Length: 520
Image (cartoon, rainbow, N blue to C red; front, side, top):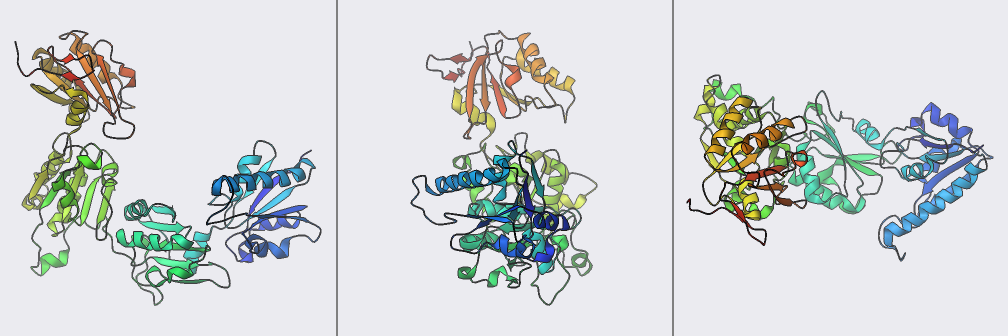
């Protein structure tokens, strides 16, 4: 019978934070294993030292390298792969001999822990049990002390090794955050916090729960003194305390509910601000090169960006920019938020992919501004900045299929009944117009594209040219030229845009698709 591989979380440093289950397993372990850094005492062993039986076999798993360079022919990755191969062989020998092995894991074993790599290797060979432990970020929050999040706040745990722009974007998009893996990454992390507008109120915690623990505002930390056992806590808005003599004020960020109406005090004392101009900006289909200089300059000046999350994520984070991302079917709610912010004199941009006026946020903003339930919104000046539309991008990749008269439709029936869609499809087909089709299909809406094909074939030849553009402008871009009779409707989804040619649309031998400007 083989032994059991037991991975035991022993918490962040204070031996009194070891769980009763972990203590029981360690005290009974015939073999105790633990990781150790290069030329350093094992932190895990130090935490559990008083629990290790006198007769236990100890297996120290000392890393060949932690950071920096190595002369291993496979580099850092190769050195660690060889190290884990060695660890696997040493511990497997005990397990094959029927001896249970307890691997000590700092914090929680499966939360940024080294032990997970051995769990991956052993789970199909031996019985594996994992005992959770108190993670370091929980001890850090208790050290401050400050709640991380409350109610509907979102907590994001981030690695400090992320690229600085990505780290800044994610910090700006969340309520509360924990940043792990500091050390030499600290200067870039601090820069990302500043770019996200989250530096003020961010707290640095070092060696949480250990005798040497300390904490202070991130802005006051000496970057040259940051050890591996440190992290940063950014409390969420609703979690920040009203006052404390040990904590600086937490960052001020706009909350959707809190910004829903102008401040009552402003109105009471006659200091109502003048509404700011609200910008509605088309970001283009994807590549930075397709963002217009006008749009880029405007995004560099606004204080708030509002939009569907994937589009908001495309706006580079910078100091002073606040981001308000939401789901895909709340366009009017987004527009109302933006109008409310503009009423307060805030500089706001509502962003859309492609052109904001083509099935984008421009119409939603004007719809919200015209709502009689909120007459104050009509006082906000709105300006729409054009962008490259998806139909233009797909057409350009194909050649010039919309070089003559054409129509554009959305196949979604979320905002209009399907009989209306059918009637318009027939009218376009009878008029022999090139047709650009947005939103052709989704996971829950598969029948419409088949029905569209059937309707068009009642008026068009099966040989009618069809262009299927998928993710045009992105790394996974594809362009397929086919015919109305042969188009594979099963492969079409929301990432696709279709261009269905007129009777005159042609395909050249080199694959170029174009529609003549003249009509015979």
